Image (cartoon, rainbow, N blue to C red; front, side, top):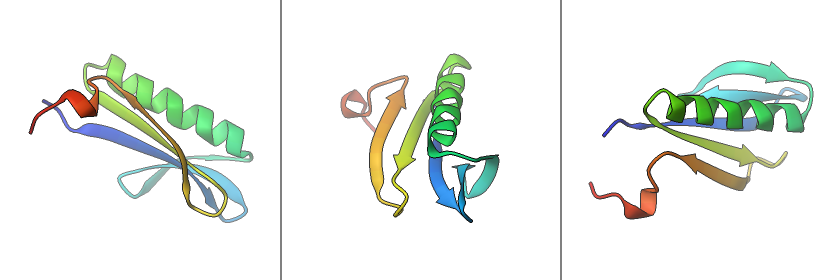
Length: 78
């Protein structure tokens, strides 16, 4: 099974960014726009035959919500 592709929406330098594997993949003016982009990227990873996840952060860096796409991680072995 392929590794889950995780996209984070996080506050960065008075703006918001989507980060994947430590690299900023897009910048946004609002939290809402960054969250939408992270969710879209998670769905795109799933639709490409893999596993996706969007991790949505609060402005203080704490995780507010996680959304997984593809196989349910609670039901997988390995």
